[in-house]
Structure formats: C-alpha cells, structure tokens
Amino acid sequence: MLDVTTRAAALTGTTRFVRYAFMPNRLQYCGGDDNAEIFAYALAEVREPPLEAMLRKFAGAMPYLTLIARSNGILDPFDDRVVEAYWLGNELLKGVEVGDLYGSLRERYSAQVSPKLMNLIAAKAPAGARPHHCFHVFDVWRNVEHLGGDVLATMDNCRISWGTVSAVEGSEVTVARRPLVIREGKLALAEEQAERATLLLDGHGFATPVVGDTVSLHWGWVCEVLTERQASNLDRYTRQHLALANQTI
Image (cartoon, rainbow, N blue to C red; front, side, top):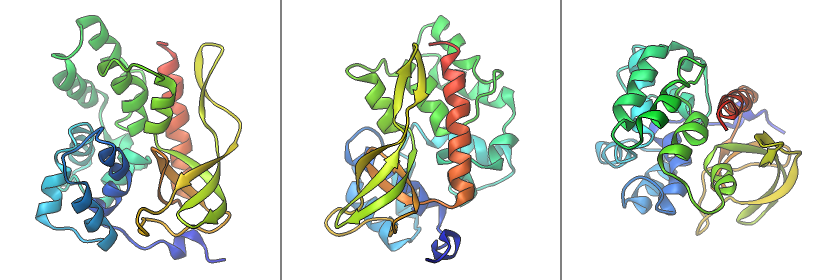
C-alpha cells in the first residue's frame, strides 16, 4: 500500500475548504445557496474568483481564516496552510496572538450574547484557545447559537472527527471512530466504535481511502484521507479544546 503522503495530491486551499464545508452547507447550516457549484469546483480542484465569493459567505469560518492569515503574514485567507490550520490544526495557530483572538471574538459576538456570556467566551483566549474549528464548536457556537435538541450529537457531528477505515463499500465506508460523550458531567471521547460514513454522492466524493487509512469526517461525510501529521494535529487540538470547554461546563 502506498504511503498516504505519496497518494495525497497537493490541494488548493479553496478545495480543502470545500471538502470540510460542503456537507454542513448541503444541510443548510452555513454558507450560501451554492452547494452544487462549490462541490463541482472542489471535485475539479479549481480555484477561481466566483468560488472565492461563494466561500466568503461562510460567516462562521471566514473571520478565523482571516485572523490566522493576518497573524502569520499571509495575504491569502484561502492559502492551504491557513485552511488546514482552521479545520485540522497546524503550527500557524501558534502565530495568533491572544489579544487578537480575544478582540476578534468580542467584535464578532458582543451584540449577540449577554455581557456575562461574552466574558466567558472571550476569556477562553487567554486560557489557551486557538482559532480552530473545535474551539468554535465547543465554546463559541454552542453558546452563541443556543443549541436545542440533542446538543451533544450536534457538537459531535459539527466537530471535525477522524476514524480508521475498516471497509469501503460503494458509496459508504465503515470507520472506527471515537464519538463525543458526556462522562461525569464533562465532554470526553469514548472508546472507538464502528460507524458508517458517506464517501460518495451521485458517484462523486473527495477521498479514495483504502482499509487502514485515517479519514476526517464532518457531519457524517468523508472529507479527506489524513496524513499522520494531520491526524496527530487534529487529535491534539480536539483534546486541547475539549479540556478548555470543560472548564466552564
């Protein structure tokens, strides 16, 4: 079997962004009404101005991308390194100053939540938060959106998770994944369990995994095959932000 790094093609940042944003957009949780178009662009791995305009409608993610890029002297918020930092985590997150994240959070959300709740959210920046999707899900989105229904299942679907492929069967894969659970009143990752995830829609998808690969998952959708480095970073930043969220749960 070829090494994952060897098999993985270099992506444009917009392609990687769509791989993660596609399914919540399809479910109408975020972004504009451009799902078919962004899907086609990502399948073709093409970046053009119309696609960038569509992706800027993702109001939850864009400020984080802009902050990561600016903090690291990168002009393009869709630089692949920036996009990877937000969804999976990488060294660029360390380049974001605490005060800049703190200020960004206050600027974005002060008008939407009470001063007490805003203080709680913003305080996570000096406590160690990074502009990573897990932080947004566990500490920002959970509080700002006042989630109803099965909040735990919603957070588990919305975070970027990962699993090891044990079977590839047509348009689906079976993966061993650690779901999000409540344990003694705190968020935690449970032991691995077998789950099904969608690989293809109408015969098209973003990944071609084989048994033994680690894949990333978002709302039950296979986003991409992860390298060892990417999987390690995702694990690390997920645990870091779970611990941070548990400080105020």
